[in-house]
Length: 362
Image (cartoon, rainbow, N blue to C red; front, side, top):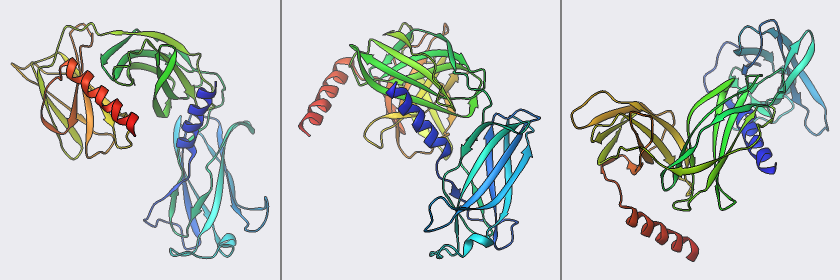
């Protein structure tokens, strides 16, 4: 239970954290500001109420109301721009190096016939005259039903540090915000691998990956879904088994452009899945995944995908998939690289043991 709550709180922090200030001034005159709010999961006919208040320094719980109004819900995902006057609060705060400012907090509520169905807070924001403040995305959901995992297929260990699995699920309220997988080694938890979703999902269906410590030999993985109200599906556990795909990679090269990654693979294979890892913090985490079927070629397949997450260098695990949809053994490479070859199993084991000895000495 503690693990589920911790993950839900991390997701809440990502969705409802402090706002960011855009530099370019817009329509409001000096002394007023625009707040842009992006929210999810309203139903046409409902209303969104926005209440904005400024803190009064050196007082406890005293606030100054700057705006309170309602807007009709038109779509499931919507942006609002709210203009309000800062004149009453600017004199309460000593200007900083950037000039006058106010500290505010916005309360965003979903109303149905005047009754509050859900409510979120943006957190404290610094606003300045004549600028636009963009709040973090807000998820508003009338229902409070937990998500459900409907199918979870057998996991396959496609590389000594990577497990591949497929999952389908749904949430009747349409607010799935995260998927979490944890590999289990002899009954002990190893590595948590989260996915976050915004806009939230009503249904989820696809191939996902979970990290494991190299060569620890995960016996299984446990998986659960969470929603915007911190509800979680029951834990679902499946065994982690070896790959059964009959296709292998002989070599590959990886190049990057400003917004894409290009991979050439030999020999020609039916499909390739690319799992990019972020190693900048010392502990690997998922950056993004991409891939798919390749066009026919004589000896080499060329795959290209966009980079949704910026990076300078990374590690990628390329997982070949045969015509039957079965994954084969993955190949780990640095990005970019002119040539990457599969590392013999014995060498990988020795390198992993050396790395563990170094960590122990430290």
